Image (cartoon, rainbow, N blue to C red; front, side, top):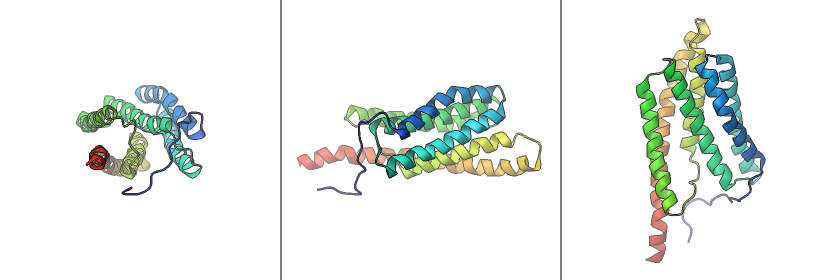
Length: 198
């Protein structure tokens, strides 16, 4: 007997519009990192905005048209993490954010790597995306362009800075919350075979 909410149908299709959007986001990561490190902030901002838009669209299209796939479940979070990692490194390198914040967010990535490793060892290829995880990503992806904008000397830059840091703190808290929720979800999934066998 099933417990909990019904799961979305997940296909093994590869060539779908949502997967193409996720792939485009992946291709943009090295360009984005180069733009941040060379202080081409206009290009970096444009790529971040495009990343946020495609992140929203690929999930929306996948759910609306029944195109949720295993490939998408892997590509989407990988693209999210690569943008976050490259942004953190670029902003820390330019002294826009402190390195300890990078350490806090990287610690969450290490935590998730352990969760994913345990999941794979037990035959779970991917875990369904949590709302908290998507909310964390949105907060951080809003924070990063605002932090770049705050580097200016205009009134807008003065306003952007506190808003950006608000997104940073919310995003960081939600990022860790999502990691804990994934771990709890995996714990429940691993308990199912034992419950059925009993």
